[in-house]
Every structure is written in structure tokens, then in C-alpha cells.
Image (cartoon, rainbow, N blue to C red; front, top):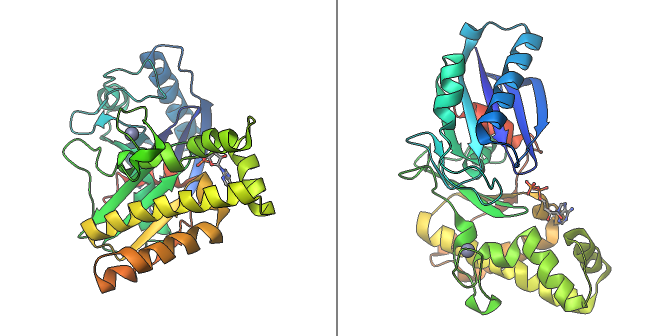
Length: 302
Ligand code: ADP
Ligand code: ZN
């Protein structure tokens, strides 16, 4: 049997058929057009799903279901994408009903970070874990938590939004209204914004990290501060949920060792209980397909 995964992002939507071993049989990526009506975009998703099913030569009845990973906020219980900041016209879109009715298949909706957490649990760095946290640091910041062997979904599928946990109000006001959210300090977007200010010119996240690798004094001090704030968030996760492990993925985590070392050191010194201080903080092992594989895995009860 098979599952369909749909990974909705602000710039592209990946759609794939995934088998029970996690193998990706067929995939299509379509651009996200935020200017057209959401129902038209969903129509394109449905067409894409039909195309890959055709290409794979699979019958509809061999497919267990369709899993969707989407930016939040959403309501997984009613199957509605509520109002994601980077999908500007998507207000209260009943995506589960629209895709489910089209194919006559069960459809599951979760936020994208939760879907990626499921993928890391199924095939990645958290395979053996019963309790773990997955944190993604990319354009934005999100997380997914496994508690007692189950994905912590929350009452509406929005659990784990660690990006809007306050870690240092002195950094200024986040788009959500609070001061000093983790996402406002440590996302790729935040690093480009503040790094540019420090250097007095417009720089991309990648350019800031190049300066960091070259040992630029001000940027090095600044980036170490950012890593420490990620450490603050990890300590809160450890103190709250007592996970076996924290897995960090997303573009910014590609900086690698300096980030993992700094976060690990902070955890060693600041987690409340002695066992918690030893919590490993490790890189995610799945690549950019984690989103779509995790979305498909939502049908499999991983
Ligand atoms: P998305 O947010 O679309 O899911 P990514 O997970 O790739 O995409 O995250 C993109 C962010 O990660 C951007 O801010 C990008 O500059 C940053 N990034 C990508 N690669 C690296 C790297 N090697 N080192 C540091 N930052 C990176
Ligand atoms: Zn915020």
C-alpha cells in the first residue's frame, strides 16, 4: 500500500507517492501561486496527485490516504488552513474536504514542522526515540514534539510553535506582537535583518554566515549570541517535556558544528535536572524531502 504526501510551502508545493518503507516513488513540485484563489491552487494539487498516481501505475484503491503538511495556523480537527502569513489569501480554506471529496480518500492535515518531525521519527535522527523534539530553523522557526511515542498535535494541530516562544525581549517586537520571539532572533530572515544592520549594508543570511566562517569579529559575537538564544529555547523544551533528544533541521542548521556545539554547551550548563543537561542535540538526517515524506507518513500512524 501507498500514501500520498503533500508539502505546502510559501514558494512551492511538493507532492509525492511514498511506499510503506518510506521510498519516494513519484514526485511533482509545483510553484505556489499566492495570487490565485486557494481553490484554484487546490485544483492544481489535485491534478498533480492524479498525474503522479497515473505515472506510478497505481490504482486508487492501493492508496491508504493523503497527508498534508502545511504552514500554520491551521485547524487539523476541522481540516482547515486558517491564515498562514506566507499564504496570504488562504483564509479558512477547507483543504481536507476539497482534496478528500475529489479522491474519496482519507486526508490528514498537520502543520509542516510536525510533519517533518514525523519523518525524522520514521526514517531519520529520531528513529529510536519515544520522546523527542524536532526544531526547524529556516526562513521561520517551528517544532514538532513526540511525547510518549506519539506526535503532540495539540487541540487544533498547532502544538510546537516554538518560533513564538519569548527568549529575549530586548531584541524587539516580532510580527506576532510579542517581544523577543525565538523566530524574531534566530530565523534565517532575522539573521539577515540584524546582521545587515550590524554591518551597515544589505546582506543575505548566506553572506552573514560567510562572514561568520571568515571570523568577522562583530558577526561572530552576534552569531554566538543567536546560537545561545537557540540554547535558551532548547533548555525550555528540555525542562518542559524531558525529551531523550533534540533534533535540529532547516537551512540555518546547515551551519553545522558551531551551532550544535554552542547549543549543547548551553544545555549542559542550564537545563534544570542533571539528566536533562546531557540531552543530545543533533542534526536532522533527512534532506529537503523530509516535508513530503512526513506528510505521507501522517497516513501511517508513525
Ligand atoms: P525554507 O524556509 O523555504 O524551508 P530552508 O530550510 O532551506 O528553506 O531555510 C532557508 C534559510 O536557511 C535561509 O535563510 C537560508 O539563507 C538559510 N541557509 C541555507 N543554507 C544555509 C547554510 N549552509 N548555512 C546557514 N544558513 C543557511
Ligand atoms: Zn512572535
